[in-house]
Image 1 (cartoon, rainbow, N blue to C red):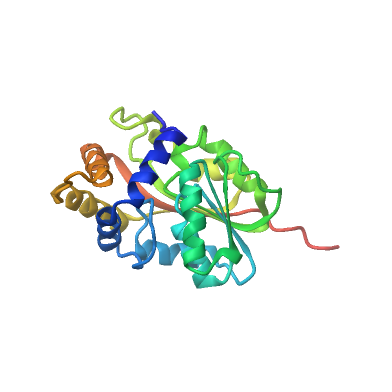
Image 2: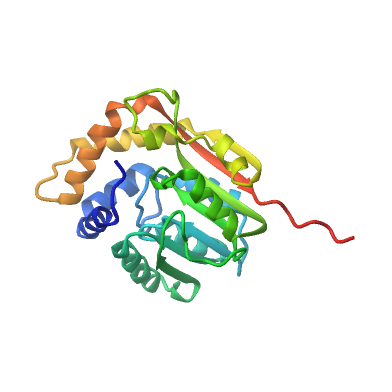
Length: 257
């Protein structure tokens, strides 16, 4: 079952009160010390994503399902680009706006409430789109990819990190995970130059994070308790998923006659 915006609102509200959870994720995934993550993309993966996006100063990145905005703000800081962050959690968006102010990036960051399948952005209005570990929450994923295609400029870049089932008939896995197939879905949504690469090293870092989370004394910290509940669920079917990085482009504009 897909979580509602209200459930994510509670998750984000708990997380902001838990330095233990944030420190654990940053340490185990090798993230920058001031990056507020809401996914499992580690520091090495973030470096690959920055390279794949290839953004320049002044260009616009859509960080779709941005959560607290950590990845988009870090990419804006590294590249000089502007970031438009969209998430369906109003609590997350408020946290992202506050974080942009704290980092001195408010003039290059615009965070708004929206959906994976309906961003509220104009057609052909962004240079690149990033979806970190969230595509499985779209209903359906193909509609989210079509929305990304719509908002991208011709020749724009798309980068997705997620998981795919090793066996789409594995009923231990949630249907939303079994239905992801980026090598087929990205072209169907209108993308070209599609590449999907397995990332086993990222996957092993995730395993280490979940195992470490289970070893922590959660006490009365709801964010750590939530991490431990998720760790038990994830580790129970860990061998059923593979970690992937997908890159694609929108067709370039036709050459002038």
